[in-house]
Amino acid sequence: MTAVTTRFWWIRHAPVINPDRILYGQQDIAPDLSDDDAFIALAGNLPNDAVWISTTLSRAQKTAEKIALHKSIGVNIHHHDTLREQFFGDWEGQRWDDIPQEEQAPYWSDAVYNRPPNGESFSDIATRVADTIKELLEAHRGGDIVTVAHAGSIRAAIAMATQSGPRAGLSFHLAPLSLTRIDAIERNKDVWWRIESVNMPPNGA
Image (tube, rainbow, N blue to C red; front, side, top):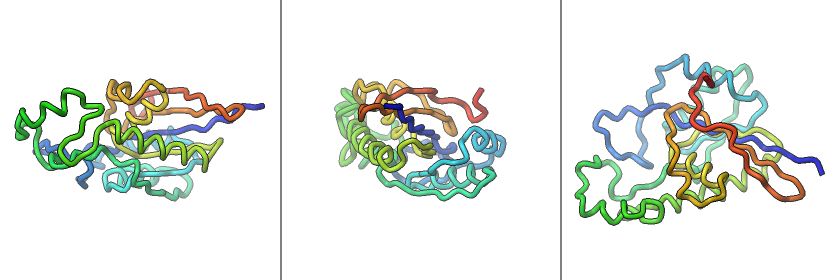
């Protein structure tokens, strides 16, 4: 049976405007969309015949819209709430330096499985992202899927591709507007994951 390859093009949203350096997680915070050269370069590196997705947070939506402006064809962007950034619960809107160390200590003893107060762990985000990827693979098998998301959700996708558990995803740095490419290769109902690139700059250099 011929193998079928589905290509996932993951883009981290544009840099956020965050002079107070707060922990924003799932809070809506404005992105800096001023680097036109980066958006043009990204658009040029993405396939024309692709399904486009962003999360429901405005920094991802606006980034996707700005990239799409530089495509030569019309783009219809779908939104997936399950690909949002990790939710940091009671800590969102605070600076790390303002969160008491005794409150942080239990979380940092295992940041993969422990949750901030009333928040979610990285393992939680890895599960919801993996479930969404499986749904996208089923719906768009053999195509290209461009997804504008967040560092946490893209790390979760990498963790799924490595098939070595969520901890592996936290090892990767992902810069704003970076491109990560992951392919799903299916043969005889088995799926093999291939990581083509991680954290590539917009111009692909």
